[in-house]
Image (cartoon, rainbow, N blue to C red; front, side, top):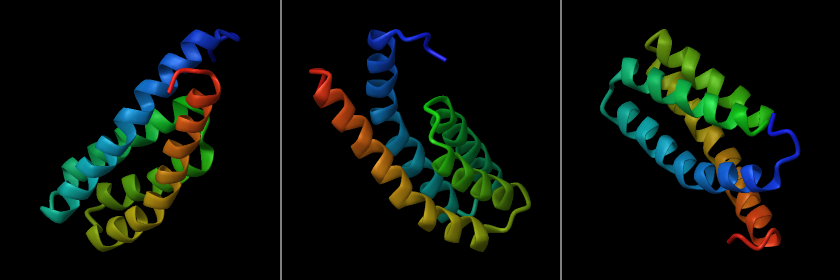
Length: 105
């Protein structure tokens, strides 16, 4: 998607490394508030962000949460978010490692 542009890749990785945890926190907050429509929106946004990075497992996990929230199944959305969180943590760590290796950490 970036056409081999390493600088662009590093910029996207750096931005995503900061945004993804915020998006997960917003998702959790909306679930804690019992707000299914907002949880749906946050899960959808998170899914899009990680899809841009090609993180398919994280995208798939976010999709499960998105669908549960769309159907106002907050218990399933919470369980899905519990499964999503370690995948997000790993992705953020991998982005950090990439940036460090590229001299951008």
